[in-house]
Image 1 (tube, one colour):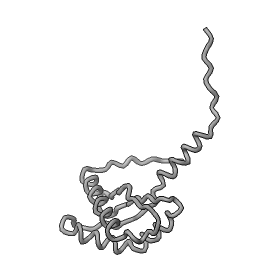
Image 2 (image 1 turned 135 degrees about the vertical axis):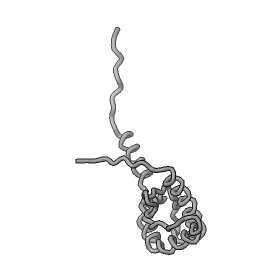
Image 3 (image 1 turned 30 degrees about the vertical axis):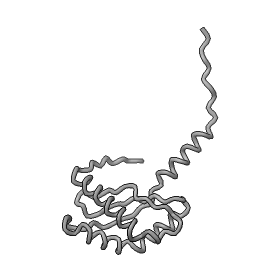
Image 4 (image 1 turned 90 degrees about the vertical axis):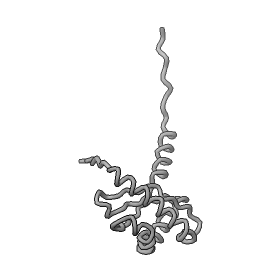
Length: 130
């Protein structure tokens, strides 16, 4: 059985997540630049828990095959990233959220769906005779 949970994000969560995305992108650009070798890394989204204690950060990696290696580097540096984030937002936020990084595979899934749709053999619809 598949269940779907509707999660409504509050204005506060949305605003905080947007600020975290901006700050984390700055950290990645400034401090993590050389860590990913030839991979192009983009932070695509941040979701924050209602109590603002846990942030889920979605990371897109190109080329896709470098995704696991990039996530491993991020995992090894997550404490340092959180510490840097804490210094950035320390005066505005009561707590620095726990950071959880996830590989965003939206682009890869979209490419697979496009290929699947393009491979379908759909016959042309015949026009009805008058």
